[in-house]
Length: 96
Ligand SMILES: [Zn+2]
Ligand SMILES: [Zn+2]
Image (cartoon, rainbow, N blue to C red; front, side):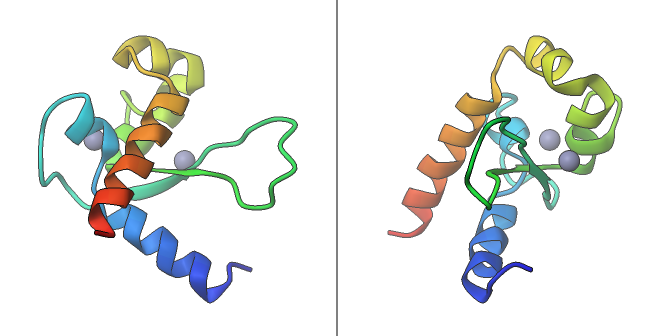
């Protein structure tokens, strides 16, 4: 179960919109994002980091679940870690 604070934080991330559309493709104000939970093997943290992705880039043929992690990173030339970094940068701006 997510705590109330976690839910608020996840909502903020979803509201950023698709991180791939905005940061990699340069499309601002894209469709509402779904949250993709990034699994880090060996991580002891109970909350996994999340990426906001539009339905296509989440579940579509060009998305993380369609391509798999490596395929996704190769296709778009960006790693999960880079995208997570962009998310936290955007969140920092949004909180100001
Ligand atoms: Zn997208
Ligand atoms: Zn997912």
